[in-house]
Length: 182
Image (cartoon, rainbow, N blue to C red; front, side, top):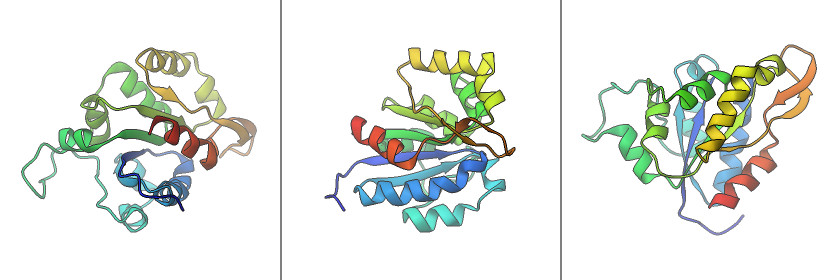
């Protein structure tokens, strides 16, 4: 285990079948001394309960609704953005990539990213057909022009059972990319 870095990471979690890999990612980031705060999309909560991420991170999990009653009076997405040293979205669906590329801010995660001035790393995970779709590739290209870092997916067995590009990058690779920026 490395020494404490004092760096704060927001881990945005979206509704990809690769969501279970976010659990290992939290553990690995904490081993590096990072503080991890999870922001889940509403759809992600259909696949894994927030209590799992709270237990692993040791922090409150921030949920999708930007209009939830706050624990304290603060503008939550702005507060999260101000406290972050880096935002990592892993796994990132085609939906979240499209929203970010178009500037759509309709949930806590997209509003936090929009309010942030820190590096944003995106690790896509989706079916190969979705990943290679011209619109998705255009959205990824647009995000790159805005200095977002894309951690490319790898080739492997997809949820549909076929082999193709779209599997979430290896945890080691994601952690390595995070360390580059912090």
